[in-house]
Image (cartoon, rainbow, N blue to C red):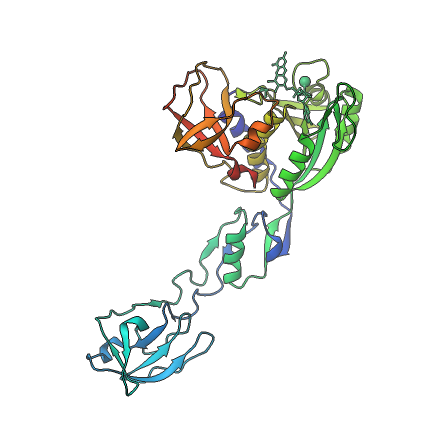
Length: 395
Ligand SMILES: Nc1nc2c(c(=O)[nH]1)N[C@H]1C(S)=C(S)[C@@H](COP(=O)(O)OP(=O)(O)OC[C@H]3O[C@@H](n4cnc5c(N)ncnc54)[C@H](O)[C@@H]3O)O[C@H]1N2
Ligand code: MOO
Ligand SMILES: [Mg+2]
């Protein structure tokens, strides 16, 4: 199954099982959370016309070329009386423009005369250096749409409208399982045949960055009865996310467990790394089984699982930014799977890590992005490839 077909199906299933519960949280706790309802402005922004410059406010029709008397001084945070006709007002950036004034001249273009009157040295225009009331938003306007993922900019925008709290979708609950008899946790002494579990911490910390509630379910031995029993423990999560045990080996049990007590919906994608990615249900709970090889885990989480989790929370734009760049390498063998090589940009061209084995996580630590090479064709240096920055998918 082509990657885009698998992604479309995953997103359809995610949209069909949206997370609907909401919670109201203070602004500072909203990083990475999903807005549950449209944010409408309850005020005009700015609430009143204000000065964009330190200088003088005047009514342009009062200006004859003769110096004007300064009738008041207006600082930000004050509420000035109307401008006296035939005068100007000293004004500072952010201060309200007084009624009657229709122009602000910056002080660099004004000369204070010995008698304290001010001469304006060049032509001015109505509205100049005035930020009009409501230029950013007006009462009732939609400022953010439901389904927006909140970050520093959206938090700042909500604050500018005076919102102290927002209604967001509750966190997605994800149970993370690492399958494999060979796995032990870092900090322990490595025995014969063992390797350290790297997928567990990789996924748990990534999920946390995405704003998920993580249930770290540890290591699952390669054994069918234990697999069944362990999967059955998570009937209150939104997703069980496992790694390993999804290929065709005699120690790969996830697909069997899903077939027996649920459904195996997707298996075997035309993606490299990541071919045996598995999606299904176990006793009604959605399960994504990522392939165990660390680079396969990374790629299939970035390109399929992350969009799935975001769509479950109602996010519309779930696919990461991808742009085309010339390849700085040859890829002489046409594969039948779309490849996501770990690469970097150098002088505007994509270059790739020397070892693209799906077991080599170091390739991703070196990389700045995933370099997309199309299936069924060879690639010559200088031809175009897709580039998905890792920074796009990690947060
Ligand atoms: N006969 C075939 N064999 C394989 C095929 C195939 O089509 N036919 N596909 C290969 C591909 S592609 C992949 S990818 C792997 C996926 O295998 P599994 O998802 O079943 O994963 P495991 O066999 O359990 O492990 C694969 C590899 O990754 C290491 N691993 C697993 N978990 C972790 C972890 N938490 N931290 C670090 N490393 C981990 C594991 O030791 C294995 O080396 O199957 C191919 N085989
Ligand atoms: O698809 Mo596997 O992930 O190549 O190693
Ligand atoms: Mg296996």
